Image 1: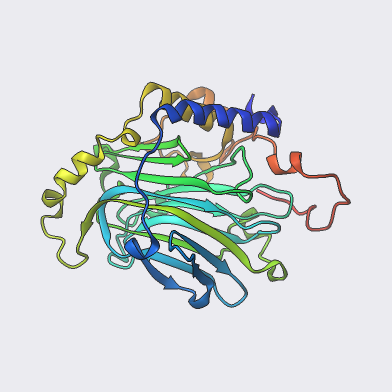
Image 2: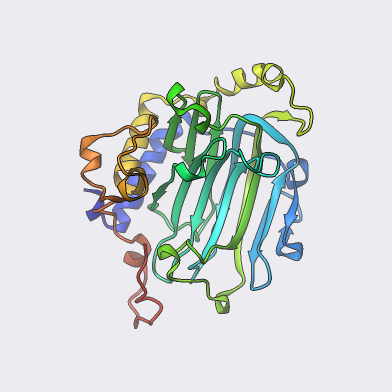
Length: 339
């Protein structure tokens, strides 16, 4: 059972899942920062490498930082290898996402990877979100642990967005699929979006529902982004007329590549990942949504029994970092509760 897997076994399992998926591995060209992105905020808190193929984003007590794609995209594949900050990171949020909130503030679309920091000795949480047409009150959030330490080396996080479905990847393993349906209506993202990467202070909610806040004595918090990928149909943010027709060929090509096709092997890898590492699902959150059913939820009875009325996994996997760290005298920080 996933909840009883020790850290080493979990890492071996994820390696095997990646190995299976790697038979159809992601193979996409990367680009330099200057070829696809620009500085968004944070002044000197964004540092580009000498070869312009990696970027460091820093959060300190004065500011976070971020960058944005130079273009909007009408669907696409967006990817980055990310290394997260070490040590005490409660309240820290690192994000890699697509959004059009600056163009459509009231009806924006958004697809997120959000990385939620934690107290020392506790694992980062990874969250995916899907918002369409301003549907933030029906946020389709899922949250996971991962069977590796995301602060030790970079791992690739990818978002595939097509007119018919969305797939989130960690390395070569698909972890979530959202299939468009008529019942979803405008909740499925459909308008051109930019690609963002940011680091910021999310103390109000990121760790234990905001009970544990950021401590800037551990700053600066540094995240690293490399292997940047932007593949899709570029759209002028002002002249978006007939963008669907103009982008039809690019979308057709996008949907024919390996990472857009979930083969039986990939689906098996995705199912195993979700069974072992998903710790929250909006599908089962009765406190937030009551008896509302979502058309994009696959309500599996065996899965449902694992989740409580708040949508949290009642049998989460062990804290992987805690199982690896050396024994030492615990501190008051380590004794803090964590979600």
